[in-house]
Image (cartoon, rainbow, N blue to C red; front, side, top):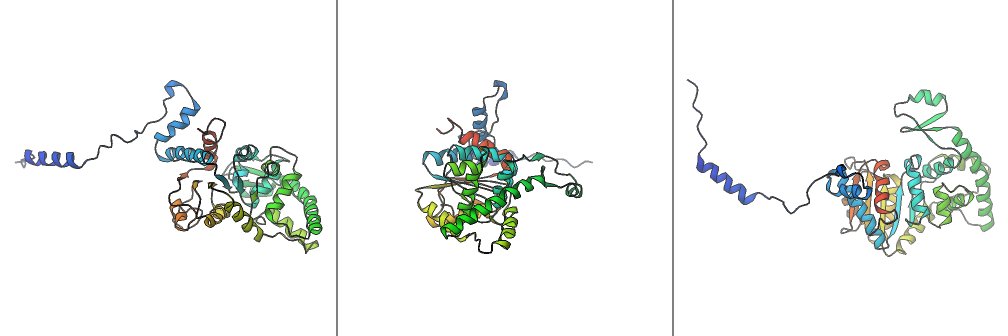
Length: 340
């Protein structure tokens, strides 16, 4: 005989119902999760605004847009920090737009960004494949940055440019008797460039400083090494860089930062703002995680513990490839009529 299944006691059911009614939060007054309604066609502004209610990183991106609008409303000095791969990619043109139109106060980057901006004034980089065989590319004189190919002739153009430039900057050092520091070194490159597609060109034209404490960590470093063999008294004074950026921070009433990626650029931006009790606004865009203890992956809350970002500063970290998130951030937060 099969075992008889006992019915659930009605009093027990009523007890559960009473308990859930007393403890369950309905959250009816919270924003509802919903996506963009394409049935109405495409209104790009409304499309971006819909990200706020989409959830996950779309919501973080929408929060980032609102924070950069606030930076501008409050007239904060905006630091744009980025790794060199942003200039390898099409984000170069997005950064150039911000510099050309004085949307940011200062740039902080690495050596690769400087040299690649120069290279692209001679010839463009091209799209390739992530899985292209490294040996084949090497044998054909092609370098790979992700799915972007950089033929070696681009470095030949850079080398020719830098040979002339280093002679000029060395003559300037001899004339003034002062060592050249990276910010001035980069400004002088910008003054030499006659191409308005260049970030450096517009930074020099608009007097926007570009800080690069790791200036010799790249092809420029190789060229400086060769130059110093015949000009041993040539000096790039990196120590001046920290003094200059800290002075810039201290002379700003409020500071905000948009930080693409990690590395030296990210840390140098945050470090400088310790001297002013931390950033007033911060937006991170990167895919790094904190679990190896790296500064690149560190969350904003960790930076708060060091005094790099104020505890109450509006902030968000957008976990996303910057080639996706950054153009959308600029479209929503910086283009004409975007700031309310």
